[in-house]
Length: 217
Image (tube, rainbow, N blue to C red; front, side):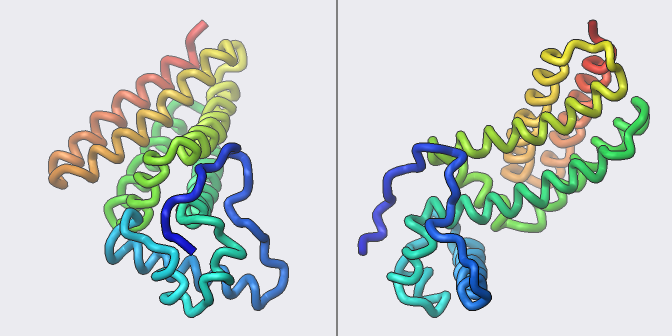
């Protein structure tokens, strides 16, 4: 089979895996494939990832690999899904106890610091995130994830000020989340000192917008 990219996903909600493993042996095989993908991406980046090399590294046949992952985009998306699930759980946990503006400032500011540290420490996570921006269907998948995270933030804002307009809260939350992704990509692409300043600037703007949104009419 060729390593040329397959047709992009038509539906961002479609599953990345071609076949969901149900047996332990199959699940272990998928985990081995994903671990091999992480190692290869860490070594050379996702652009250089080839399905034939991935199969060899994972110790599976190319046919077995394609049983689970129809193309490289599916591998990248599966890794992105896992990172996103971790992120969404972290956001929900950190914001669950927020009951006032000061609590929101501390919790969301802490989330920004956590994400920045993760992207500095984990080049594979950074690469996978960038790779999702290069494919139109994967960008749609990432937008859907941003909307899900924004919904968590908007719900907190509504809890702080039930009289605020829901549409305004949703718009502010989604804008903050999307700008956060852009700010992180920029921050990790420059020297560390400058990146720190960029993240601090984003944090000030994000917290100001969330505070404003919670009291807007």
